[in-house]
Length: 406
Figure 1 (cartoon, rainbow, N blue to C red):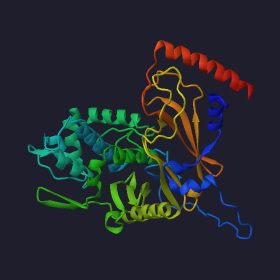
Figure 2 (figure 1 turned 120 degrees about the vertical axis):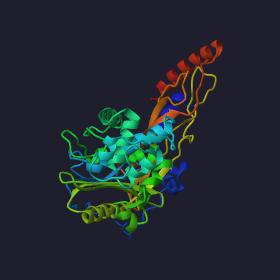
Figure 3 (figure 1 turned 180 degrees about the horizontal axis):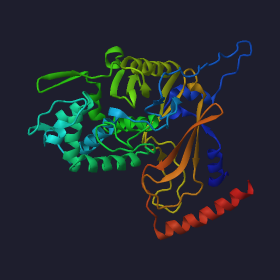
Figure 4 (figure 1 turned 45 degrees about the horizontal axis):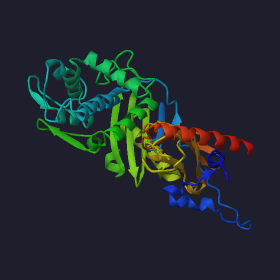
C-alpha cells in the first residue's frame, strides 16, 4: 500500500488541470494525438502600440498582469489625477461609516478661493458629501477637494499627510502628495504604475461608488459641467476614471473599460492635448482587448484539495484560495494553462482558517504566469490526547515506510 507521504509527493508533482472550475481546460488531462499533417496556427502578439506620451501603462484589473508599459515608474506631476486619492479616501470613510453621504460639509473661504477647475460652491454654505464627491470626480473641483480635506482632516496639509500614509500602504513607491487638488507644488509627484495601483483599488475596493466615475456631467448651483474624459462619449465600454492637466504635467488620463468579463486599466501621462490623451488611451485599450483575454480559473473558497491532517479533530483539511484567481493570456492559448498544487508535506493541527498551507503555480505552456497561496478553508482544532498519540505513531511509521520507496 502506498503511504500517505508518498501519495502526497505524487500529488505535489502532478499537474492539476484547471477543470476544477474551468471546464475549457479539461482536455489537458487527455491531450489529443497531434496531427503532423496540419501545423498548429501560431498565436501572434504584436509589440505594444507606440504611444505619444511621457509614460504609460496598461494592465488587466482582475489578474494584475501588465500588458504594456513605458517609463511606468518615472516621477511626474500628476495634476488633477491627485484627486483619485482624494476621492478614494472619501469613499473609504463612507465605507467605514465614519461619514455619511448626506453629511453637510461647511465651505470655508479657503476652499471657495481655491483656483483652477471648480464645482462652484459658495463660501459660508454647506454641501453634502455626496455632492462634493461628485464634484471632485466628475468636474474635478479644486474647491470641493479642499472642502473635503478640511472636513476629514482639519486642513489640506494634514489631509496630504493622510494621503501619503495610504499611498505607502497601497505600495505607491513613487508618489508624494502635498495637496488634495494636484495644483502645482514642489515635491508633489506620482507615476503611471502608482496611479494604476490606485485606480485598481478604487475599482475593486469600493465598487458601489465606482459608478460616479462614468457620469458624463454634473450640475450644481445651476451650473452644468461635462466630464472631461472624452472616451465616455466614444466607447461604451469605458466607465472611468479621471483626467488631469497642468503645464508641467501635460494632458493625462487614467481610464478603465470593461468588455464582457475583462476589465482593463490604462494610464497615459504627458500627452500634448485633450484629443491626444483620448486617442492614445484608446490605442492601449484596443490593443489589450484585441490580443488578450482574462479567464477566471478558481473561485474564492472553492475546495481544490483535501490533504491529510495529523493530530486534529478532523483527518482532512479543505484547501483552496482566499480570493478569486484570474489569469490574462494571449487569445487562443487558454488550453495551455495548467496548475500545480504544492501542499506542505506534514500538516499538524491546530490549523487556523486562512492559514497558508501551500502554493498554487499556474503555467502557460512552460512559462510560469502566476503563483497564489493555498490556504485552509476551515479551522482544524487539535485532537484529544489519544488521537494525538495515535497519529504520532501512525505518522512515524508512514514516513518510515514511505522513505523506503523514495
